[in-house]
Amino acid sequence: MSVDVLSRPRLAPGCRMNEGSQQPRTLLMPERALRLNGPSLEIVERCDGKHTVQEIIAELQELYAKADPAKVEQDILGYLALLEKERALDFEP
Amino acid sequence: MTSAIANPLALIAELTHRCPLHCVYCSNPLELEARAAELSTLDWIRVFREAAALGVLQADFTGGEPLARSDLLDLVRAARTAGLYINLITSGLPLDESRLEALVAAGLDHFQLSFQSAREAVAQEISGTKTHAQKLRVLEWLKRHRVAVTLNFVIHRLNIEQLPEMLALAESSSAGRVEFANVQYYGWAFANRDSLLPTREQLTQSIDFLKKTQERLAGKIKVEYVVPDYYAKYPKPCMGGWGRKLMLITPSGDALPCHAARIIPGLSFENVRNRSVSEIWNSSDAFQKFRGEAWMQEPCKTCDRRTQDFGGCRCQAFLLAADATATDPVCSLGPHRLKVDAILGEINSARARPAPLSAAAPSADLLAKPAWLYRPNPS
Ligand SMILES: C[S@@+](CC[C@H](N)C(=O)[O-])C[C@H]1O[C@@H](n2cnc3c(N)ncnc32)[C@H](O)[C@@H]1O
Ligand code: SF4
Ligand code: SF4
Image (cartoon, rainbow over the protein chains, first blue to last red):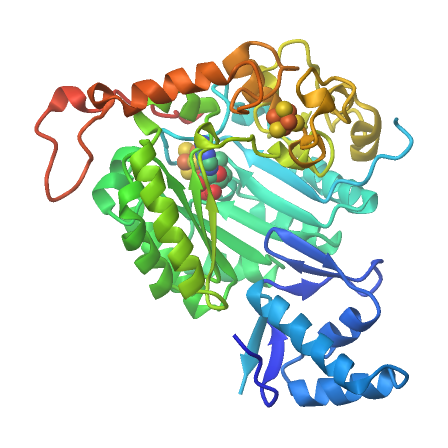
């Protein structure tokens, strides 16, 4: 499984963030819940079916300008692959 | 030790014990609660709010059959408004397409549909009802309305060789997850155990098949497999540890640390009609009883695995060793493993094996047919 950088990830049916007022921000899915903070939250908030993977990478590289851009890219691809394995993401063309 | 108790993550809401099916493996207690004793709509709504306030993230609506509650729509709406993620664990009836649509519109997040088999005849024998065709209809509606769905198959000696058919059913559906859950031996399943336990050979083949399947379907369908713990070397971390992650509320409002906890003598349970969810979680006797490690005996007390499996299941220890504080009898390090081995010995000796049930080749030997104890519907 490798992530296509031109695809647009979106949360799969049955996966959603908890309500905005609830802390900590958490990704809810069948039988599981993932606490999100920092980069993981920034990534998941952009999995809206509109951003391409490439755009998510670019936006986070800007947001974390002090970090090594190649490392940011690698981390994002790794995290998206993990969420895909959890069946938490669908990738739209 | 009362000071630092983490919040429960999920609330298991047994909305009713009523059920149109009569599954021989049903994990519900032998003493089912009556309709007249059930919590009201308003009681449940208060429970959802209290649970969410305590930090609970998810609610599993189960039973019995949750769809048998005529106020289910109100309960879904209220739990969702309280901020909970709602998982409906159901046999798929009574349901029609418009009720499904309404439930989803009210905020239902996920639908877990259970099947007894991929074959109508086996499903009928196991559930004591003709309900398989309805389940297939529900699958179609779920696909049409893009509802997140997990298929649940309870696995036992009569259907463990039909995993490929069940998988084909899952692949033809819109399910994102499929659970092959070997029967856990509580309640009605314990009563019917000797007709349900698979043989070692069956088990080995099934594990092999499912490993390959998991790889093949990675990223498409998440395939989960729960092995029968009687065949395992170490016990399962039952409920994620007693009073650590989950709280179960029975139809009449008793708060239990585990589905089967009522069978343990000497435990008394608080009721949500009298105490808040947070008080019960933090200080009730039943939740304190096996929390942490103080209750443990050797070998658990000094075993490295105790933080992973918490010494296994307290109810199983009571059922098999008549001592709820014993090491789970399935554990190969514990003193009671011999009892489990004796049970498996019986199952794996040729004598005990009934003819497998199949539509194509009906069993000639009627005497070998299991004498099922069917789960009844409570009053
Ligand atoms: C007790 S049922 C209640 C919900 C609903 N009536 C149903 O069967 O889907 C809850 C879940 O546990 C499964 N189940 C029932 N008895 C079991 C057992 N002895 N071991 C493992 N799973 C069991 C069912 O298939 C279902 O997914
Ligand atoms: S009898 Fe079957 S359908 Fe009914 S509650 Fe038990 S497992 Fe679920
Ligand atoms: S001895 Fe106790 S803690 Fe150790 S593996 Fe067995 S059940 Fe678990």
